[in-house]
Structure formats: structure tokens, C-alpha cells
Length: 477
Image 1: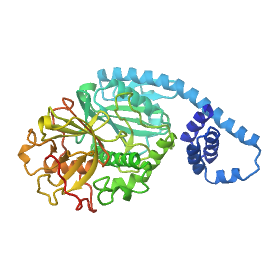
Image 2: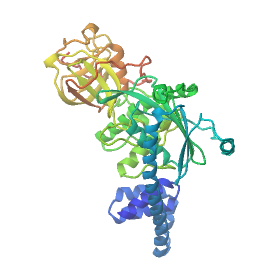
Image 3: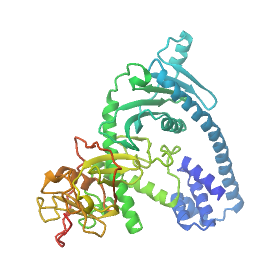
Image 4: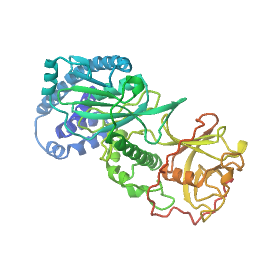
């Protein structure tokens, strides 16, 4: 099994090496893990076919494998030493940044040395010449992530992870506010900082928090606009990723195509599709398949996402407007939480709240506990202005549901017979955002009071029929 771990690390760094995939498959096969072995053999392609039917001496294969393993072990030792050094330096840097006189920090470094200099200080002419001789950072797509504003521990982990990336990059970090145990995914999150790394390993850290850097930050330019696009993409991918996982949990397999998630009722796992979902379905399916098999993410670099243990705070780096290669930012499936005390219903992923709606309830008539969305129905009364409104989401095998209402003034009060009432605009967005199979938790005193609603609602195209003409719903309105 030890060889398997090193070979897994090697194919992660070199996904095009079909011989490495073949050798990893042989290790899995030898350990009785047939499913993982088949996955690796598929990645090996013609190498598998050639070697399984050839008379190549076993000794030759063992020598090749030992060479890969030795290279992997050496790299692991180097990276471990480098990781400890850089993590310590980054945490030290984060302590220093708030007292910096200027927003920009150059961090010139390689695996042995890191030197910090404040960019706006007056430099020696010779030093300035040296800087000018360095290669200019090539134009490339900005990557984005988001985390709690001012959280030095998570920032240090993220920056240390980013430093592990071998290729040049530009990354922007957006800031989320904390409300108790929750982080708030607000529309147009503010830009906290950017980090650039060029081909020589020189890092440039730029703070956009005037309070932290005691400075006047530069103009954000197009970065803020692209960040808003990235946020929209991540919401759509959160819905798709959650639907794929719910489908897999229910049917024991991943959907073959996006069409399997968008069939007429009752197979309407998601409320509609978007160009982003169509663009990224296949890449997300590859990641979900690899996760199910325990295979490391197939990428040309070390994984670019980390999740704080026990916190559920995603910090995945990804570009806007391009096909993603790894897990989406919201790597944990969407859930619904209902707070009976505060009359709130939230859509969450891990410890991040994406939406927080006001709802109408039934006081003690509204049950507490865990449920699953089993039916998603358009016009549950047969028309959009009945007592259940234009959308209904049934809670497990019960007479309770989350639905619209023809009594909008009851939202925020305890006037239902136990169901959860929402305004039309809110329930239609919820219907579009969460897939069938989503977990729902009803309890008390767990959500913030403040509502979290975007100006532009989540509204994917839904051309297929999501009504249920064969059933009359008798929920406890």
C-alpha cells in the first residue's frame, strides 16, 4: 500500500504518464481493489493493452516502477521541508502585514530563502536595476477564492498552499463577514488582497484593506467585475455539484449526462440549467468519479484547495469564465436549515450561508428534525396562485413541505398548520437552487437574524415539465 501512495502522488503530478497509471493499477489489483485498478487501467489506455499482451520482463517493470517511486519519495521530502519553512514564514508575514506602511509587499524567494521588502520604500539604485531585470509576470487569468476577512490562520494556510504551486499565477482573495459560527456569502464580496508569483518564484502581495495596511489601496479595476462573475459561477456549480452527489446517493451511480438531472417530474433533480453547468458537467463528473475511487485529483499541479478541519470553510482557487479542473468552491453539498425561533430558512454549504430567507411557520405544529427533499413540484395546486403557491418541495414521506403561499402577509409569522411558507420570489429561487435529495434540518436558534438576499436572483432556464398532474397534494398548509 505504501507504493500505491507514492504512485498516486506521482500520477497527480504527471497525469499524462500512462505507464505510471498502469503501474498504479497493478498495485491496486494486487491489493484486491478491482474498481480502482480498472480506473487506472482506463487512464493507461494503450499502455495497458500493450503490456498486458506483451512479454516484457517483470524485472523491467519493477525497475521502472522503482525509478518513479524514488523520484516521488525525494520530491515528498523536499516538499515537506519546504512546506514547514513556508508555512512559518507566511504566518510571520501575516502578523507583519497589518502594520505595513504600504499595501504592496514583494516576497522574493525560492525553496531556500525568502526576503521581505516593502515595495514603496526608497530602494538602492542597484536593487531597482535587479528588479527591472527580472521577467515581467505574464498576463494570465486571475484565480479567485473567498475566506473570512481578517482570519490570519486560514489566510496563512491558503497562502502556504498557493506557494506550493510550481507555475506562475495571479490570485485574488475575497472577504466574507462572520456572523456567529457562519460566514456570509454576500453579493459582490469585497476584494481583500491579491497574490502574484512569477517564473522566478518572486511573490507580490497586495492588500486592498485600508484598515489593515494603513494605506490607500490601488484601484481594483476589472478584478472586482471578474470576481462578481466568479461568484455567480460558484453558485451555479454548487447546485450542479450537489445534484450530482444527491443523484449518486440515491441511484448508486453518477449521472451519465446533464440531461439525467433535468428530466420532467419526478426526475427533475435540478430546477434548470445554465451555460456554466453545461460547460463544467464533464469536469465535475471526473472529479466526483475520482473521489469515489479514492484517486487523487487529476491535475498538472498539487491540489489548489484546502478545507479547514472541522470548520467546513472552502478555499478552492479557480478561474472565472473557464472550465474548472478541480472541486468547486462549495465542495460540500448544499443543505437547508430552518430556524423556528427566528423564522429563517438558509441555504448553506459547510459553514457558509449563501441565502437566508424569511419564512412563515406553524409554531409547535412545525416539526423539528432531519428531512430530505423528495418531490420538487411546479404549481402543486395545478395553478400558481393556490394555497401552496407556484412551487412546492416535499419534506421526506410526510405531509409537510416548503412552499409558496397565497397569503404573503403570513410570512414571518406562525400561521401555518406546520408547513414552511415563503414569498413567491424566494421559493422560486430556492426551488431553482437546491436539488432533489437535499437535506433539510429544522431546529431553533441556529441562524442569523439578518436576511441574505441578492439583487439578482438565481434563475436558470427550465424548459421541461416539472408539474405533477397525477397527484393532489394535501400538505398541512
